[in-house]
Image (cartoon, rainbow, N blue to C red; front, side, top):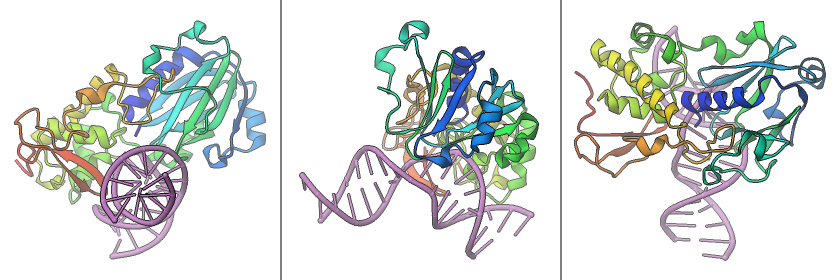
Length: 291
DNA sequence: CACTTGACCTGTCCGC
DNA sequence: TGCGGACAGGTCAAGT
């Protein structure tokens, strides 16, 4: 469920909280797949390394270490990265207590613990789909997803988007924009929201959508993601930022999880269907199949 | 090759 | 109340 905006909000929090700190240790708790890294690599390239920077690529988070290696993190659906300073809340602030979804840490969903100078970063992941991997920074391409990742929405143009999506002419539009090779970082929430904004039916075939509307779709992806980042991302059930706080974007969502409510644009009741195996919310009146 | 479907997981919710 | 099954969705492997 964490998509580009949620990962970006986590990244910004972590930059504030952990860049400059030195790693004391990292270990998995009863979930080796969450940290597919050998003990000797941990000893040689993670322990005693300093955290120099944190980047994001699509939904991937990249923590750079002074050893020349980096930690690559994918939160998948239920991953959380929550920092607790050893000095307690007074040092960094715990945020508004009502915003916090997190209690004592580690909890039963904690899969990996990263011990730092001044605190601890907990990787919680209820469903164990996420992971933390280690790669030399020059070999990020060994992560398949990284290698095939399409352009960043905020650093590309509608021309890049249209060129990429036209490689999938026979696909429906919804699975096409969920394809990370077409554009990086779109997941189910922002797919539904941007298709609503650009008035495209999620089952439209890519080949039936004109360039004007594809351009509008790209601009809608950018717009909904920027709005979401401004509201701290979307908390559907699990998502929290690096301080354990929820995001509030779903209050502003127009269709996602609003089936049986009226469309904010035309009043027609929003439907929920399955497209390419994903729950899909749309307005059956103002989202059309073609131009 | 293009595209679709199932597996990976666990917690929650629904109906009986 | 307890229990089975459906559902949630990001990505990869396998299937059409």
